[in-house]
Image 1 (cartoon, rainbow, N blue to C red):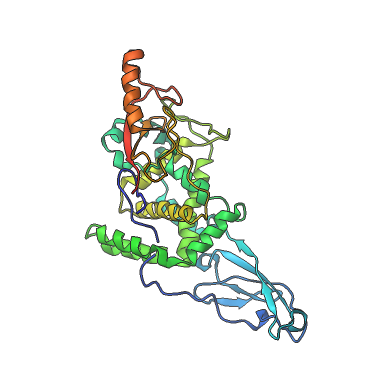
Image 2: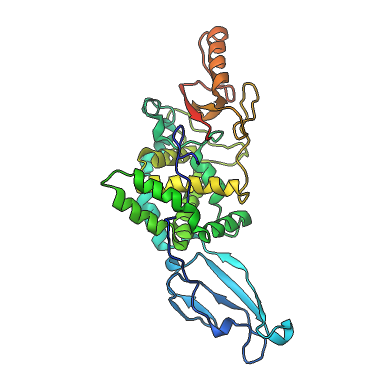
Length: 363
């Protein structure tokens, strides 16, 4: 079972059980590799879930409206049967993904989920606040990551065409909707009675090829984009505006998204965000995305969080969001009390520690 947010666990990600299969469009004589016995010219075909095709300029077919499509174009070049040695000929395909953020309907949907500008700027102050200390479950976290939402954006949110592994991973999800069935059923069952119908309707729309490639990937793209907007330093100076690689990162926006997804578990953004986390975890397990960041305790160099029999409990350090294994953090605090006159600082950045929050390793 994959973690939903620590220390709680989320259902395993995947679509509604019994989802109907979707046609990739009607057969088209223009694409059968034969055109009057002559070599066929390359054509562009966009697959539509609802078979709404029309003739495209220059030959081939095109669907009505990107928001109703698979999020890809197939450039198919066919060879005549005489050339291929086959009566029917052969065809090769190239995937040309479409960016969900270029679709007006997806942009409008994301705008309804996005934290307000004030919330985006307040993320860095929240990460070390008394509110978070009292309600740590309202923040989506991933052990070893400064921000869970930034991790999701980095792994699954690069622009289509820039990361071949991410493009392939999304097509894998769109073609394997059954992997989401158990998780979807569990979420509907766990939802409050007054939310069950809305949750079921949301998941039925989300776990279609269109929902995966435009909406779920659209959220990943938004998280990738938000992390790279012009950074807004926190009023208290707790935001780190430069990441380990030297690039500018808007940590305040990242933490605002972590809070936004984690705050209301059965809200639309909470459900979609949780399933994005579960989907990324599933893709990592299958070797389709780069593995988790190696988790190393900065105190005793433990490297066992994602290994069998490894450390069960770690803690996130606030407000800097570095991590340490729980047993070492406890010893570190005692050492600071004795050697530093009670000044409790992060062993990574030496910043003052306001509090720590435990996170449990999934079984």
